[in-house]
Image 1 (tube, rainbow, N blue to C red):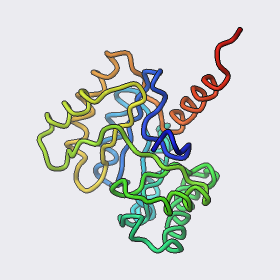
Image 2: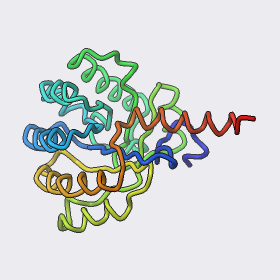
Image 3: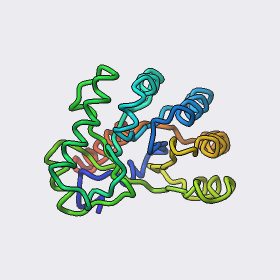
Length: 221
């Protein structure tokens, strides 16, 4: 589907050793600071896909995420699969979430457009409307179910699935913070040792677009 739609990011540029760490379901008053501390320790920038109703409760955490250099992106306002949402309500909730982030951090609302749907669920109708509303879908190459398995399994799944342009999903909400920080402490040094750089999702989009433009231009004579 990535090849058929320029508005879905499953993976970044496959020719660049870049990885995007992404975090869903926050912000959370306990878990998000834990994740931010580990990322700061390793000098890594990530992308946080936020839940609107929690963002509304904890605007100070949005500012902290932003001030640490991470990208603020969207997940939802309430955690309901998009195919089950009324389209009018879906747009209202997404725009509300975007405006909450915009107002908390002083960002232009239209620049907040990267969106991961809850459970990764969407259909063709959702995609058409989300694109029309100015959103871009962000999916993944790896999403270990760290909330229900030993930490070591998640660490192995992340490292074994590593490829250029990988998009990794973890969570900074619902009490998952301790496990996620353990995973990060293990995988970040490993990923760096293999010569990968960490980028935000917005940078991954740019890298993919540059690669596509280079392919279209073809070899120089």
